[in-house]
Amino acid sequence: MSLLAAAGLVVDYVLTVTVSLAAGAASLASSFPWVGSHLLVTCLTGLALLTVVNLWGVAESARVLMLPNLLFVVSMFGIIVLGLLRSHPVAVVGSAQPVHVTETLGLLLLLKAFSSGCSALTGVEAIANGVPTFRTPRVKRAQRTELMLGALLGLMLIGLAALIRRDHVAPRGGVTVLAQLTAGAYGTGSGTAGCAEGRRGTGAHHRPRRP
Image (tube, rainbow, N blue to C red; front, side):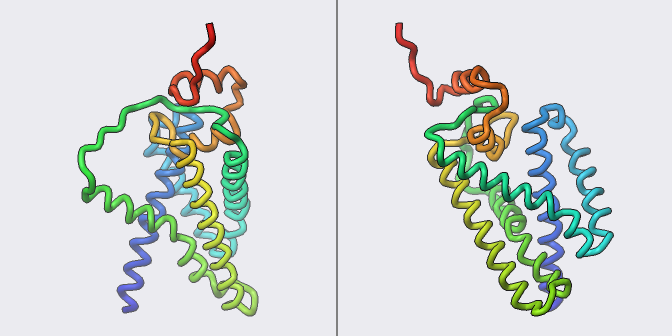
């Protein structure tokens, strides 16, 4: 059983790093289009940086990654709160593209769902492995941390799903779904003209002009 658990953790770590780096590179490409032609280099650079940081040790790497994680959580909740407060997205980004369904369920879709699930649950084993670094009582502090992590993940998942369902967000060319939600909540910074241009390009929320 110990070998099975160790093998499961290795697979989980590999898939977590793979999916996380790919998602991070895609998010950068959504904000900086020139990154789109260098996704592999971006992923390898991120992998090298994470390797160097983690070689410092569990506690040291946690201190370095604490601020980016905090910014991520705050930004996500900002997207959810602002998005729900607005009656419609502030801006629409990306180019419309038709989605052709060729099959209902396939091996690649199952593998993608499995890898995404592993990345979503990455914090579970991270906290479990870091129990020795907690202050006493270690077990109770680790349990509370697990509960807080589960609550944060659940709230973010439900909030983003509610926005996607309400605004009918669908895959668009050149941007991720999260980038669309971010533009809908915060805007693109290009003003009303950019917002109107985005709406005009999608046909969503478009109202005919009166003669």
